[in-house]
Length: 483
Image (cartoon, rainbow, N blue to C red; front, side, top):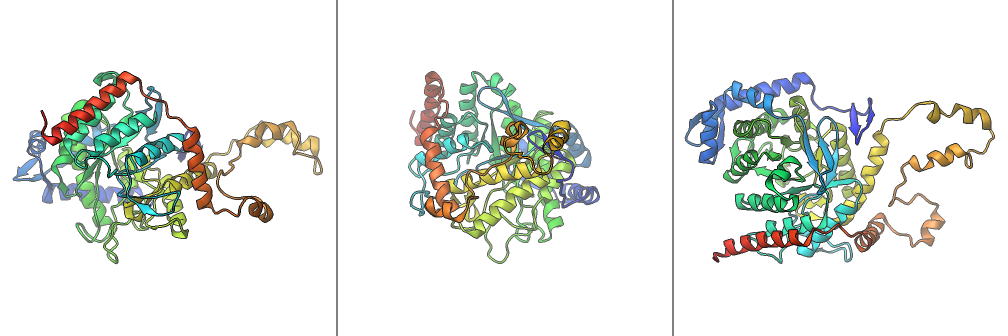
């Protein structure tokens, strides 16, 4: 069954792997963890895992099956994110799917000029404001890496910008452990206390892990810290099939899964019951033709998501992206296909909406177009309510074959329920010409300007802003070596 914001259908369901295939990959993963192990590049993480029963040989850590089974038994099947006001915004479990942006693009496709340029902090603020305004985007990420702030602590400026420009949940990324701590401290300031943020978290950390068989120090430190804090995390090792893992999808997924299960085991050993989401992309062949890390490849679609579903864990997916450099047919095709597969496979928290050029470029226009596409997908996969009111047999009997349904009260009650695109041109040719013969790309640019002009994100209280500013200033002083 596919669920989309509470509306269900029993038919819109697709799976790349069945239970038998998932179980075989799981058993293979256990063998990798027991025989080969994972290189764990943090001493404390190795000590924690050793205390739980792992074998440690230098940086190589091997996990017995009982440790993994114990961790999977305590890992929650649900991950809840709230908005700034403490209202549930994301229920990441089952087949609930929510979409949002991505982080740290090195370039922006300017929606005014159509040119590619380097982003600044103002672009991060605009992106957060736009995501706050778009109804089909449920969470916010930084989207761009601003070049007009100190690159050593750029993530602190991103976090401040997001907290000031949205009330939606935030997924943040930091290059180091100190940035993760600073981001949590900012959230605690907004929530009012550490306990208040723990009880109703409105932000979560996307932890980038080197690969399935290599766990880098920063990722491990963040995993331990967030588990100690009792905060949800997205623990994401990614493999490149044929480069750092077998070229076959099954072999790539099994070795990537080893890193996923090691992260879950570490988190659950530190604090049983802490929520951990797992990746819903990669796990398949790399593009060995170009040696570029593409965002939309056919072979990997749905494979890691099915493994996450096999374990009953929340899945952090990817969609609304393209490897195209301009908003052309490839961009439309890949963005739509990746949005669709994420929904049909049941990924829960789907990020990178608006990403282009293998993640090197972001586009607000693509976000607006994807927002429209998501609305269409939700309407196309929603369950159909069948009852006396919707069957409307009394209306059919009243009006018969030649009656005017257009002005009937039943039509007036229900006509707003249908999905109407805000961007697609559905009128006659003459009307399209009269309105300027615009493309969807042009209409998306206009919609961005309209939304940014009229949408005012709810500001933080002045005292909270000062507290966040103080944290950012503290981090800047620390990186500068100032007392």
